[in-house]
Image: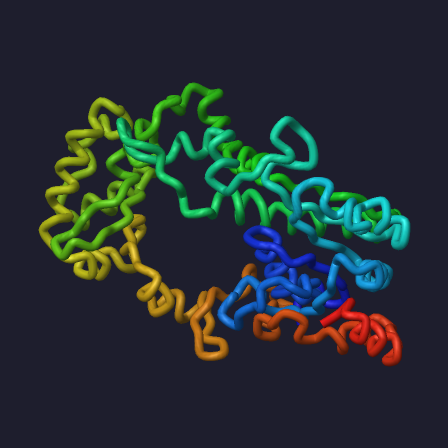
Length: 375
């Protein structure tokens, strides 16, 4: 099932955003084959970002294995690789070699810094990439150090998800033109793109270039987190006046008493007042009070609680698969629903079956194994 059924994608094994992109495409119905290094990690069933595909193990130092990889390219619609610039070229699997074999191929490249630029060949991680975009600078409290937002902004939002969008756009183009192309997805570019609304507010004079002083960075009393009597936390976000009025009503306050609530000078006093109120009851007491209202108040759940929340349970936001809880595919499709496919493969688990599906005769598969080119 899934809207991408019929697409065949090769994924050269990597970490972080590349596997995440491949997981999203596999969830949406694409056939994804992961090319693992013969001497690479063994793989794990609990690695959710590896779900929904099969694995073939190749010795990429072997000319026979490289030729085998190119035979897979012949039958693929798209390719995902996440090595440093130049690595695939040195292997003989760069864009020129692959597009020469399959002119319709969409060749997706996932890096931190991009394929060119002064830092292109430099090592880095999510935090480094978002540091150069203003995103890391903007997250945190005033007079405190910037706070890494997990690795969601660089690796996954600005990296893997943007690569998925780029691949799908290029695949649509290839269908209409018959010509593939290279998609250069850099986490630094994607993280900068995610910051477009914040830069837009700055351009309009509605965002200060200072951490923890703006409407959406925790400075505003009506867009922040508050500790409750039991040490747990609430998210409080009634930005619009009508939602702020609902929150005030539930708290026994009158919204008309706060005519200057949009003025930064009034924020510290209102925040202290709200903090004192929220400390009087437990998180779940507040959650029950605000449940079903437009107050824009919700409990902050930990990773054990989140899958059990009634809303998440009703929607199936999380799924129990092979005895473990994991996020379900998203978004939802009315006619071609996405689904979790096969469990994450172990290295080389499907080598023979994949090669056979791509038209490699059994005697050639046996010869490749005998030579050590495959595992």
